[in-house]
Length: 331
Image (cartoon, rainbow, N blue to C red; front, top):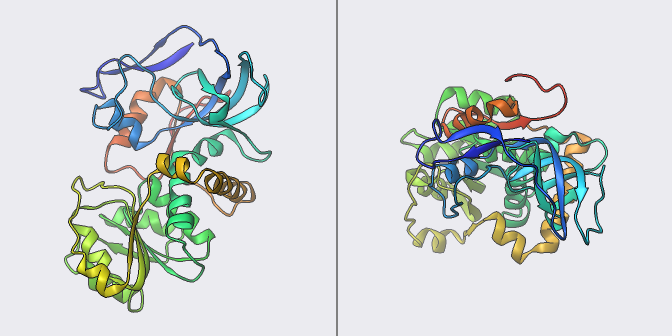
C-alpha cells in the first residue's frame, strides 16, 4: 500500500515522502480501515517537526483522524465487520490502509460523507466540546473567537452560529477576516490593533460573554478585560507562540471563569458527555446546521504538500486528504 512516511522531523520538505509499505495486519481487537478521507491537522505538522509533547520514532505514518470502510477485522472484534463505514481516531491515517482499535472508531451515520466524517474528530470535537461543555455557551450570547480563521477557529464560528450565538471573529489580517465573514461571523475584529479591549467591548455592546482563545500571547489579557461580570474565558491553544501571564485580580473583580480544554483529558474525565457531544455534532453535520469550510483537498500523492500548507499561518479552514475513488487534484 501507499503511505506518507516521515523519515526526519527536522524538515517538512525533505523529511516526508509517499512510498510503498507492507499492508497492515489486524491484531486482537483491531480492524484494517480502507481510508477514504483524512483530516490534516496542525498537530500533525507539529509532531512531524518534533515540536509537540508527543514524539513518534521515525519512520512513521502521520495522521490521526480518518473515515473509511473496514476491510478486515482481527480476532475478538465484535463491533465492526468488513464493509462497515467507520470514522474516528486512526493512527497512521495518511495511507491507503490503516490500523485502528475498535474502541477508537464510530459507525459513520447515513448521510455523512467521508470528507465530512473525518472532520468530526480533533478539530470539530475541540470546537464543540469547548463551546458546549466548557464555556456552556447559550443562544444569544456574544462569543469572541481569537484566531477565528484557522481550523478550530473556523469550526467554532460554524458551531457557535448553529448554537445561536452572536459570533465576533478575531483574526490578524483583512483576508482572514473576510474568510470568517463568509462563514457567518457577525462582527470582524483585527486583533493586532492596539485597542483590542475597547474594540471588543464596543462590538459586544459593553462586554463579551464568552472568549475562546486559540492564540495566547499579547492578545489574551485584552480579551479577558473585555468580558463582563461572570464572563467565561476558555483557553485552547497558543498559536502566537507564547503563554500569557494574566493578572488574577481581573478574575476576582469580574467574577469571571478561566478554564482550559484539551481533547484527550476531556475524553478521559468526561467519557459519557464526550460521546453525547459527538452524537450531537454528527447530527449537525448530517442535517446541514454545520457546514465545514474545506479549503484544501489533496490526493495522497500530495500529502506532504498538504502538511506544509497546514503548517503555514496563511491557511484558512479545513484541509483533507481525499482518497476516495476518483479523487483528483487540489482545491
